[in-house]
Image (cartoon, rainbow over all chains, first blue to last red):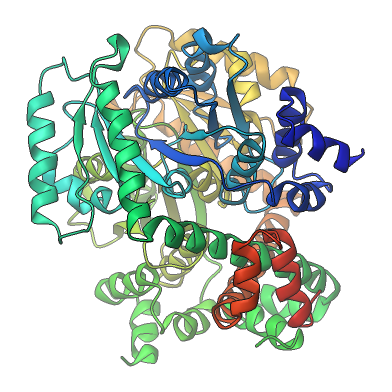
Length: 312
Length: 312
């Protein structure tokens, strides 16, 4: 494969090139490094929006509404639905995509589900690379929607300029929210399905918890939406834009992006050493025997591999 | 803290020592390496059972039933409920623990929820260390129940001798199951809440898909249970025991445990290098500037750090 041609296609915004490039990311293909090198200088134009929440709260409908509002503002819009390749969410994923089909014929919209089966480091590494491809292709906003509800998924959604946490009415009580650490992750809260019973209570609980927390430069708004009939979504769009502008005004956006980039480099470096450690272990029958006989524990074995590589 | 005293307490089966040791794992404490070194030689007696499935399928009730059946066989039983510290599952976790309270006063039972906020490498590293502590403390079976439903959670559940995947009736169709990769992860399938409509269909779909897949040495059984009134749980217990005995008979159990251990050492080694890479990046303003200016992409930056450390 000619990666430079593929890169050229991506930066020209060719949809087939973008789709193919993201497939390379999914597969963890050998061409990934040159693809990454080729697109990187063309990135930086996109703003990213992480959208996370439990199954059934209406994330995909909200993503579809954000696409609609972005298009109304003449912005090229992308949605990257990150599928953890979990055994339990495959069904939901297929169904959800259908709800965004109103945008299927709009050339200014790109919607893509991504699984990360082949990618070393999983979603944590695959998602930012796919986002950069969409960024280089000229999409002004990239919505990163996570499908599963676990540690990795929340981390991926938190890797955005603005992280939107979606709840539905009746979701637990305020103490549980605080205990679960939800307050720290979100820049914007959405209580979707706000026409349901308990919505006012959920909004109130959230606001109260936020007031009890430590003061922050940005106070996360709590927005009630009924995405299915477009209620509150304009307010959500504006809150997202305002959050990013607010963050940008005092240098926080650049700092957040920088921290994200350095963290990614560290993870890529760690994955490189994993490969070396695996190869070294495969050759060292004595060390493996010591492990199996429980003479050397895993932490000590890792330290031995590091010492031998001269990095201890 | 005197870690050797703590290790002594763990191997004597002292419950407070076990609880405290698992807290050290959760926190990613500095004492972790000496704790690991101390307990490792006392491990190897426990069989591990991974229990995973979407929220609401009844995993905790099943875990409680496995504890009951294990106790009837005079085995010391432990349940480790791994909480991904996700914002969305905190509530479920609290409720689920209550269902296992019938065992709260039994000194042969240890039930513990574990979050992994402070642990480098998250659940993938914390869970096996916590399991070894329970193993060293003499628990004959350790049930690892994952609370979230994402990539990390499925990986953790798959790190057991026997992985049990729990479904409820009405869970998608067979094609989606195959697409989502569920068939590869499970050693035993459970269709819980089997008194509900659609249970026969779900069991049938699963069996058909398993027949269509590639032949395996072990054919995963599909067991219908109604855990809430103990229906089918004896059959589940026997299937788990049979799976492990079958695996052990041809050396597969030792191979699985060995592969798990090596993978863990590789991850620990990778995390060590992550720390070094982070420190190197923090000192290298020129490299960070090149990254921010998009002159050097993340993959190349990681390669540079590896080359400098002499491990490229």
